[in-house]
Amino acid sequence: MDNKNPLRQRTGRSLENIAAVNESVAENPKTSIRHRSQQLQISRSTTQRILTKDLHLHAYKIQLTQELKPADHGKRWQFVQWVMEQSEVDTNFSEKVIFSDEAHFHLDGFVNTQNCRIWDSENPHAIHEKQMHPQRVTVWCGFWSGGVIGPYFFENEAEIAVTVNGIRYRNMITDFLWPQLDGMDLDNMWFQQDGATCHTAHETIDLLQQRFPEHIISRNSDVNWPPRSCDLTPCDFFLWGFVKSRVYANKPETIPELKSEIQRVIGEIQPHLCAKVMENFMKRVMACHRSRGGHLPDILFHT
Image 1 (cartoon, rainbow, N blue to C red):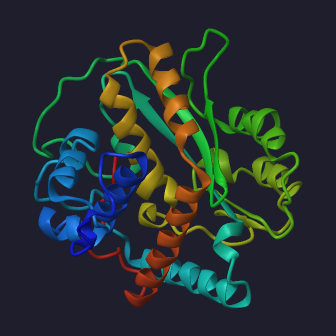
Image 2: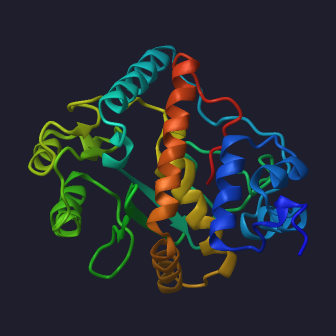
C-alpha cells in the first residue's frame, strides 16, 4: 500500500467532493485546478470533471453584478461585528441561525438575474433568447447547521408559479414553516430574511415574532440584515448554486420533473454538509470584518 501520497485520500465525484469543490470555487474562483486539487486532496482529473460536468463551470473573467452603495459598507460591518460579538459569548452561535431565501428555477435552465449573482456556468457576454412567459417554479428554503427546511413552492391551486407577496409569504410561514419547526428547540434561535417588501411588512414581522421573539435578522426588525449581501447568506453563496447544478444536470423537461429534481437534490443534503457551510459563513463574516464591510475578495456568486 502506497502511503507516500496523502492526496489520494478522497477520490470520486461523490456528493461530498462536489460540495467541497463548489465551496472552494466560492471562496476563490482564481485558484488553478492543480492547486485546488491539492488543497482539497482530490485528484486533479476528478476535480476537473466536477468543475466541468457536475458544476458546469468554465474559465471566464468575471465581475460582480451589483456594486455596494456607499452606505452598505457600514451596514455590513455593523452586522458582521454583531455576529462576531455573539460568537464570543456563544461559540455555537452560527448553529442557531436559520437563513431563508427564495429562488426561481426556470425549466430552460436560465437564472433570474435579480438574485444578485453572476453566471459562472455561462459565458457572461452570451445572449440568450428567452420565452416571453418562461416556465419556472419559485422555491423557498430555510438553511441552518442542522439541515435544509423545504423546499416550499409558491404556486396556485393549478400548481402554476405565483409572485411572492405578503399574504402568500405569511401563508407559507403558518402553513409550512411552523409545522416544520414543531419539535425543534427554538430557544435562542434566530431567523434571517432579506429586505424584500413581503418579508418586512409589519404583519410579517409580527407573525415571525411569535416563534422568534426579538430574534429576527431582517430590515425593520431586531437586527438589520445588510442589503446586497448575497456573499454572506448560505442560501446565496452555497444552496441555490449547488441545487441548480445538480437539478439541471438531469435536464428536466416538465415542471413536475423540475420540482421532483429540486426535492430530490435538497433531500440529499446532509446535516454534516450544512454544518461545514456554516463554518464557511463564519469565515466570510471575519473576512467582511477585515475589509470593513466591503465585498469579499475573490468571491464568486453562484447561480
